[in-house]
Amino acid sequence: MPSVSTGASITVGASASVVSSSTDSRLTPGGPGYRRMSFALFLAGVATFALLYSTQALLPLISSDFGVTASAASWTVSAATGALALFVLPLSALSERFGRRTLMTWSLGIAVTVGLLVPFAPSVGALIALRAVQGAALAGLPASATAYLAEEVRPKALITAIGLFVAGNSVGGMSGRVITGWVAQEWGWRVAVGVVGVVAVGCAVAFRLLLPAPKHFRAGSPRPGMLVRTVRGHLANPLLCRLYAIGALFMTVFGAVYTVIGYRLTDAPFSLPQGIVGSIFLVYLVGTVSASTAGKLVGRLGRRGSLYLAGGTTTAGLLLSLADFLPVVLLGLVLITAGFFAGHAVASSSVSHTAKEGRAQASALYQSAYYVGSSAGSTLGAVAYHSGGWAGTVALGLLAVFGVVTITVVGSHAARVQRRLVPAGVRH
Image (cartoon, rainbow, N blue to C red; front, side, top):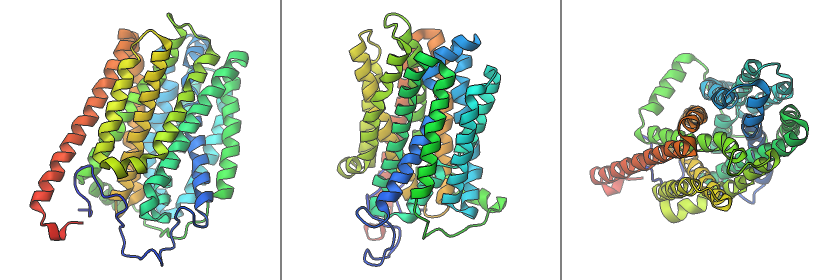
């Protein structure tokens, strides 16, 4: 059992080692290499989300071009996120053997290469296949990045560092959608995804040049038996399982909302042009702020309190988005985005803090659950929209948020039980 409570609350800044700060060579804010590391992983986050969701804002155009339904077009998103969820665990095992930086470099390199081929897809089937390959390649990024941070950054700075990586995700998601929206309005969706691919190439090159070489990585065994034992150990940890479920449910909301919102805004009563719809994704900047300040939020409210706040904020946004008045809908998207990124940053950093061994696998399991949630949200959100309109998509989101709150309540109860059972003198 890790030296943390089995609830969702973990003392911020608790160190997993007894190394004094004066001899700890890990990176810390203000220290040498920290800024380069932060910017490099920020750019990796930008490239990951820009590529992964490059077709999401373009789904109405893809539907029209290939003559397919919203549900069919949504597979250009679901295939990428689903493949990422499937491959993140085996690729995390390779990172234990070959190193975090090496695997992240290869993953980004393959993903950006495929990204340059996506604009030439001759059919929706070929497009979905290319997107699946791209998602599989990107699977080497998320778990390896969080494992790299857990090894190279001091514990007190871990939440902030992961928050910056997540903030890069939000910037990538925003810029990819805004760029594709305006470019597609003038030159079509193929040119739009091509531009995203070129931007991602630049991010990948800068990432490799900036990221400091790891100093605390120790190669592990890639043997399947050891991987199975490590995964089994993580899945036997109730706290980790709750965090995995929370990440999946938050992403279900987010995937559903942002897969369908383009259809809603291009339909009556809004009937917005594609460029304006793409600009709606500027609300991702709110996610950049909420993710990067997650450490301060946890310091004030604790992890469980932060998750409750994130869930409440997301719920309020979903309810506001039901309005037929555009400014109110935009406010709803702002709240959904802020709640999601805050909840994701808190949950993902909690996983890295909790796992004392096999951090890459622990992070990989979280990322797998997270992107399963994204795939489910994209597909189910489109189905719900087709069946019940935007209200159907909102109902799906509210159900997922209810799951987050329920799991957090269960974690709170488990923490109280543990405090009663464990003598105060032996608690960590």
